Length: 226
Image (cartoon, rainbow, N blue to C red; front, side, top):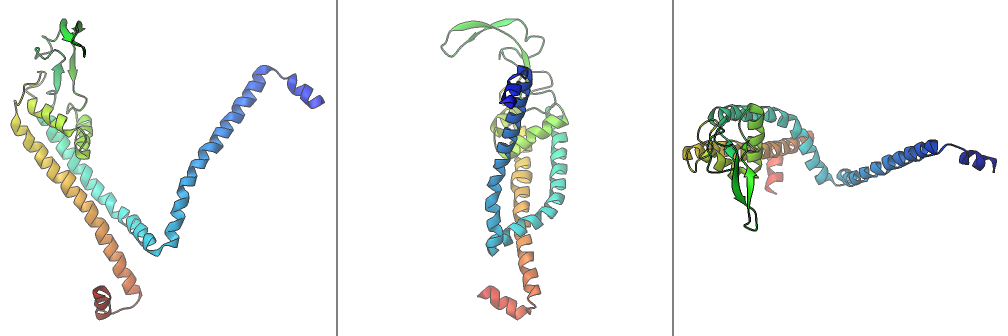
């Protein structure tokens, strides 16, 4: 009873601090429960074939690092080329009738979704994905590699005119060649390299297991024929 009276005599601020600390500890414990999702990984050791595939993936990661270096080197090269081709050429005015920054001033009449007119300030903007510097170029090209939103980037590139000037439809159609080459090198070439690397690693592991069994070539051939 004395203990309860002592607790009641504590200031409210101290009781709140103790309550908040307990709540934080409880949330931390609950967050650790997320690690339960790793339990299915235990089945890898129980299934030999699944373990072989998992070991193959882990072994291939050693060689993937070298390929990633080459990948980002080519990505940097294409980013530098893109900066030279499109730097400062992805700007536009929200009023499509204005082509330059100097003209993109004041207000113009726009229409909302219901067709009602309203006044809007003219602003000189740049596209979300652009090639104004190497960092933005790498991010834009990586987005193109994923296959999401690349038609809009291609359209902006074809419509680009000169630096600090708005777009003009189909002004530079030859810029599509840049993206054709880029798609050949990255989504097709490098993806196939990654797949081939995993296949080769899997084959090498199989050959190493046969060597450990001390089998000659004829025995190995008969196993594969079977």
